[in-house]
Image (cartoon, rainbow, N blue to C red; front, side):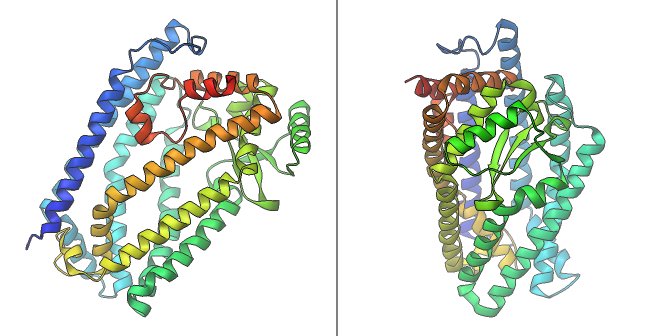
Length: 410
């Protein structure tokens, strides 16, 4: 195997990223034993706080082990020609570029998922079970896996086939057609995710008539938010953790409440959470995030088009026969530092948007119910109240609980 300079660049990127992530995790772990911040003492009692510290430690150790294994497997695959071996197997079945690519990525996906399944199983049935979060049965765990495989094969395989067909037809200009395809797909998913994807995994039922529904609809009318669809999702069949989310645009928009959220919060607290979600909609955050995602995708695809025909990008991962699919893997690894930078920017914008949505809820409803709901949800999920600032900067899409409550009380 003729090793290119880009091969060593990829190895360096992987090692550097692992080092940075490990240092951040260690810095964050050192904060686990810090006292509860001022103003958050009512989130946990003494026993619950000790439990939250144990939960954080368990996840930290698990993440460290799984990260080391992932790095070792990736490096081993690169160094010992794993990608070339899979490419050879795929070419032994068919020589058609689309067929080879689908088999190539299919084998990588299946192999990766088989290796990661024991870790996912351990996290679900050991860690989450130990801390009383898990409600998933073993049968449901593997059914979810199977459904995930089918969806990936259908959606991922279909999009990949179209992208390679664009490349075969128009060459380097494929990026424009791919950009249009992904944009349409992204908008479609945003519009119909709750109607098409969620039902494959969860049952959704309209929120029944009663006090809670009346309060939600009364608030929606007050702020001029047309809302016809309020659903409850059976999140409790997988976890005790609570959530709520907003999806869709225009007449397709809907609010979905986890049944655990309804169980854990008072009615005014639930309305305050929804007021926060309405704030995102009113402030156009959904549109801004969608546009930012589309623009970043376009930039990435344009840069990809400049490198996709360079044989060295394929040989960088040890594949002897240059191809679109091999270059796609090589480019993805080489581009990952830029992806992290754009991710940092999106996280910073997201944290700003969260403050704005909180402010909207405070202005149009009330701050105290949102404060108590945030505290209850954080306490219920044993969340980290003392994260390291560097870890927050790199990974948090939401402000810390302390910062959000200080903002709401300001």
